[in-house]
Image 1 (tube, one colour):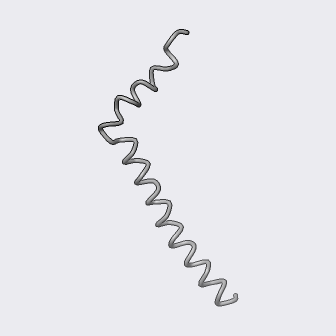
Image 2 (image 1 turned 60 degrees about the vertical axis):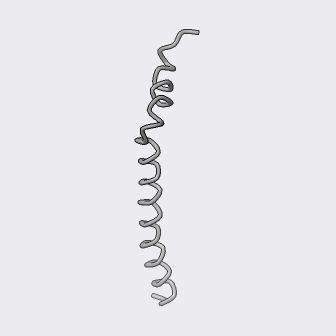
Image 3 (image 1 turned 90 degrees about the vertical axis):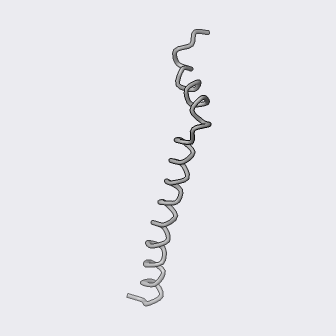
Length: 51
């Protein structure tokens, strides 16, 4: 294989993993943040509301 392709593949695999783990952590923190609980509770009740 071409050494530049190998380097690019290794770089993208490593930093892609870091990127996705970071995004996952941010989304998880957003979802579990205590001040968001009221907003998510209201959204959870939307299907139960009658028009």
